[in-house]
Amino acid sequence: MFQSDAQRRAVMAKLKGKRGRPRPILFKCNECGHGFRTVKAAEKAASRGCPGCGGLDIDVAYGEKGKSRWFRRAVEDKPPFSAGGWKKSEAAETRRLRLVRSCPKNWTAEHKYRRCGRAMQALANVTKDPAAKKAARADAEFFFTRLKELKARRKKK
Image (tube, rainbow, N blue to C red; front, side, top):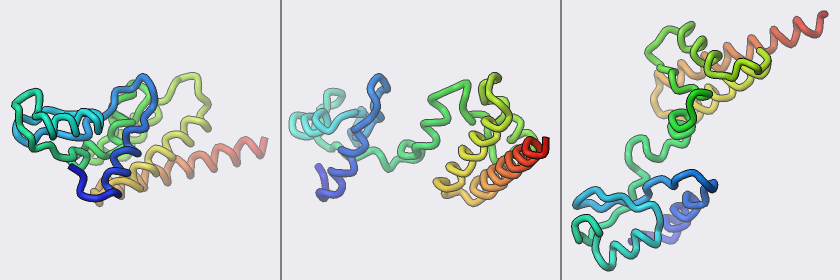
């Protein structure tokens, strides 16, 4: 099932999630695509057979496209206060407006800019797409600059 002890430790570390949130599918049956959320269930299926098809070919699924990206889960699973509308293909003004509007209305402008800047910086740090990295970094820089300007204006008063 596991090729190395390091692989097992990596999977076990992923299982330590928060309570109340469904665990991600970590293993899949290669024959029917049935997903398993725990190591125990996957090991059981590997020895007794998949409950869907009876196959014994169970493999680690966290390398699938989009499944192991923590930022994508954080963005898509928690609307409306997420950066879920952000797209690298949109104009900079549109992207930034969507980010600011995704924050709660009772937050101060300073809090909104800081949150948006950090979210875009986090995205730029984890993405492998050069276009998305460039756009996210530009947005993060924009929000941090606006935050500095806002603080400078408040300090003058």
